[in-house]
Length: 73
Image 1 (cartoon, rainbow, N blue to C red):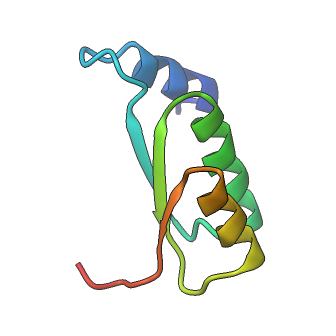
Image 2 (image 1 turned 90 degrees about the vertical axis):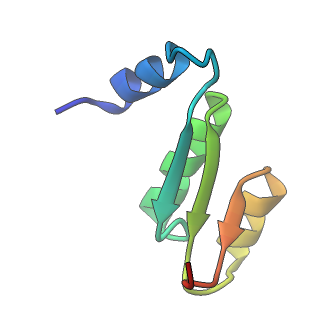
């Protein structure tokens, strides 16, 4: 199993040359939000879904992370 650093490295070395993209389900949780911030700091495009808007999800949005609250595709 890959660790987080290996995932980031593989994203940064992608053929597109970008930092990659990642989407978190439950981004408002303490663990997922920490991972979202980590990847965002590594120039990975981060987005996610959570059931409810909270102070934590508002802060993620203020940091440039797109957070969605509707679960319809």
